[in-house]
Length: 414
Image 1 (cartoon, helix red, strand yellow):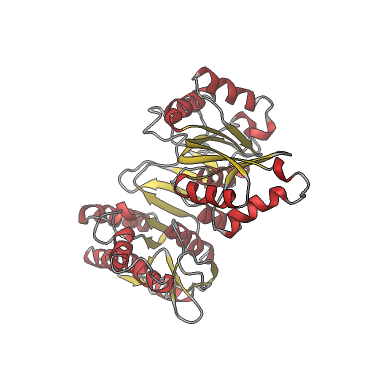
Image 2 (image 1 turned 30 degrees about the vertical axis):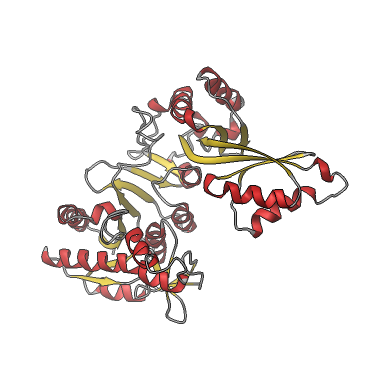
């Protein structure tokens, strides 16, 4: 039995016409000799009747002090409704379909309501239905605790569900269907000649996702990587082959991947920089530590971190900027703010192998008249903090600098 998992996002199941295209994808997979197991997100996006954000606003309209346990019960409804509608649609098309909630599908989680972590997946009930010839439709984004409480898996949780089910079933691959035709080298709304990547490594796509690309959740990739289950990001609305996410060194059959050191450019707007002076506390060895402890205890996530003997630099989301500054002011630190910033990043598995990449980044941004306010790098990424008003110029310049419009990496025929 050749099992595959097909996950359909909110836009893919939002209307009757689009759900018919979902049926077509499932039927096509069956005709190709596969046994599809289907995972669905809630129908539509923010503002639409059954979207998750709509359900959240419904309950928060009563009071903003909502228990996370009760909020999870509400948020689970979107995928339950979607799953029932898709299963009924499949039945109407002549397929013997059955719908399962996340808990019924064997997804066991911890009790961290709102962002639960997977503990294990017991696929026995899915397999029972599959062996009876049924097409199983599973509500994504949700699971169940050992006590029977419903939980949600956080944003991107339906991707996580699909990967976890794929690993548990030892699926041949997992298809992530969305409204784009694959993972792209840049945001096509900014770069008109952005290219769809034919193949990309698990590691590279995780970094793209962490740096702002929204095509797939990094947790889903990390789970699939545990068993080397290939992922394919495809469009529900076309027959384009999409992007294969896998162990790229195997796919390239020993080819030198430093020929493609950079695979994409990402951007994250709405960032603010804090420059925290620690020189007033020179006699305290924990002067920098107290800055980070204050942010951690307040639940404020920080990024782009640089530590110097008398200064600490980092960034936060703009919506928490004033709270972060107030905490540091109360501790007596000197704080300088730089609001209206953005992060642009280049991502690629070959960055660390190739000298001069940073020089090319600086050259591209300098030529585009984009000020660099701060940088952070790793083996797979180089990120620059820039003025938010310069996002388009920066992304276009980096995309052109690394010739991503002509990137060629199609290995599927090999």
